[in-house]
Image: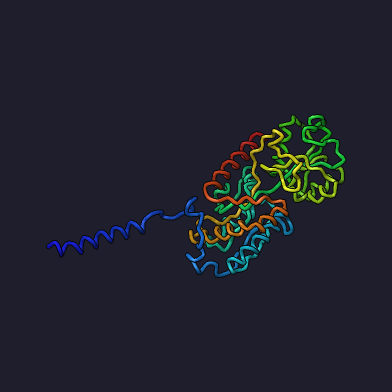
Length: 335
């Protein structure tokens, strides 16, 4: 009798172990399941089987466009498929985010996004309420922004703004109610600058043209728009918005160093529609992470005035929540 029971007991125990090993997470884009791992390409050899479309929320030739094209080329070589760039500019970057969110969640449509899109989303109703309506796969890096004046300006440091009459000050951010505008609001609040003149612009390059022509006294723009004029001696950057000083502009302090409260984040995100298959998401994430870990890629991004700062999973989620809260508080305070 014992000999007959033993095989049955072994079979039952083996079956139980098999069921236990096959159990676990039911999927979903949690921070752990979304992080991917080395060799995740092997988990689905059928992806990608066709070209990938990468949507960019700015015009061709912009720093975001150039950075995206560079990264897309690097990723396409590793994925062994072509990546087609589609520029969808305008609307405070919201139309591009919406287009990504409404695309088929199969991995063949991705996009470049930014937390700054929530500034526009905070002001108007759109097809998406915030970036939670998208799969924010990773942070690629952070834009390097600055507060700049003409080189012949009497304002040599941000502290000198305290001695300038605000009604004689004309300010040109890259766009009204954009993140560059919010950064100027933080500076103005810190130095007690009230009714300054706000100039309308069509972008960072237009803001710099207004500065060089004398129409604007101060600009708040990405450094990519002013760096050539800084190098030529026509423009002086007074402060940068990043946490650390910028290579090549080591003498320029950060807003934090000057005592300006700076909770804002101007990041470059890799986004996709929600509900991607886990294996497809992991392939995209691990490929991007491999590219971003390449020192030569990081060097090229820095040349574009983008600070390479790759984040994923819980670390990215925490930063996104903090940035979203900061945008909401500043927008509410200025309404």
